[in-house]
Image 1: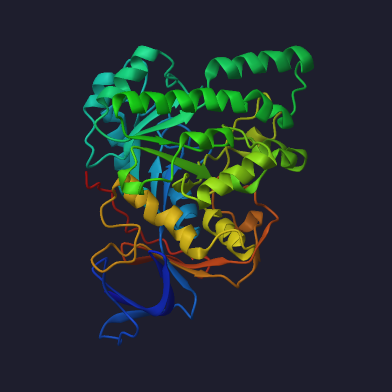
Image 2: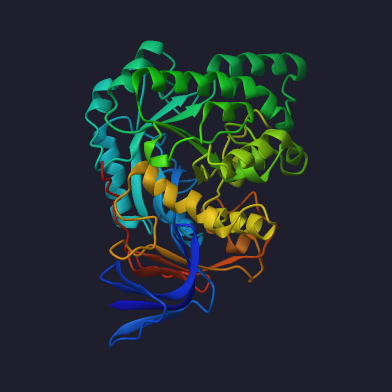
Length: 444
């Protein structure tokens, strides 16, 4: 089957051009101002809307295996393609933790059967699995994840010797969750002494504080410089941390890179009053000044990537008192349109959105032939209508948990069509049910 996308505003590599895109056997074969329809060719009329490369979300938690009451690869990847995310990199804090290659390959097998989006997984590091880390194939596995802050199961890496071994011997990119565990625990005890069981969500950014973030991220950056490791720091949340990163060299030459997530760009500590635990993430959403600093670093290229840290929990779990409510929330379905909302607000250009959500994740992780609209590349493509308002409601949320921190929000842009490897997997408000996903490969 050939597919021809007509009448699109093609957004790619800093430009927007009007034209058509021809897809054959899952690949983009021609990009031109006008392409004639061919026999046995499906036509998708973009109707003058934006055509962008599918987003590559480098940090999600799809909860399978072991936590499937919250979500699974099928449900959350369906949510992803509905949101214009065509590839994801999933994290290892499932049950069992993906800290061996045997468990990791079991996750790949599940995704091969059930995922609507292209997929890869990270191997989790621990204080004592350095031999598993060394066995990682950089061409077929996205990277090594280190939790330098408390996490699910036996995944907190807090021994300096273990950290240095991982940084020294990891055969591929290392991604870190940076919060200093001792600082977080000390702050939590202070608030417990003062408030007992009545700690509030608005205390969260004071417990998981700027200090906790900076101590840990600066330690990771220092280790990477010492060992020449390839380091990517996940979900930065403070203005202070921005001094650790540079925009003085091209992304391809950076050994240390940075990511920001949707919630840290969209919310501030003032929002705890109305959203409570539903914006409780680790690291915490912090001040307006922190949010402004993150935006400044994103736009001047100290921050390289926008991701989601999609991490669903049930409504019942999130409705518990602060101390019992888990951190995290669903975001993949609304990430692209949330950024397009900021385009409407004059905060960011469409070209920059595409750069940070598609081009840069592809470059940073060295993904094989994805993240760009180029002839010879996989046809992971999304049509976005920037002038089709809609409201996030329970009935149109696809995440298995059934809620969203954006519930009740009116977005001015809408995902019209999503193609994965040339197959139309989302259209007219519905996932088509057709799966055409692939395991991501890396050119390293």
